[in-house]
Length: 69
Image (cartoon, rainbow, N blue to C red):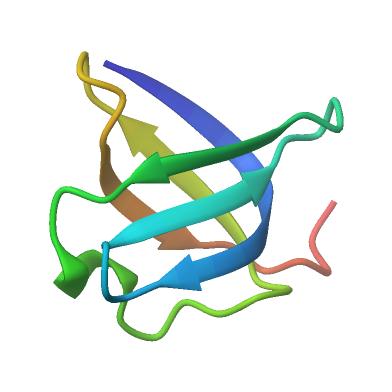
């Protein structure tokens, strides 16, 4: 598994469920979420760290304070 730290959330789709986020490098990824529960409380504009499993599914989302360095 791997982690992306400090990504910017671009879109959240509860129906699929999936998460679209932009990395610090400016790449935009849309990946399936392991469950819709992971996406609760996450919205466009949030800064988060996300963990991805070997099937490229989002398995963990942690909001980070966008004002911290």
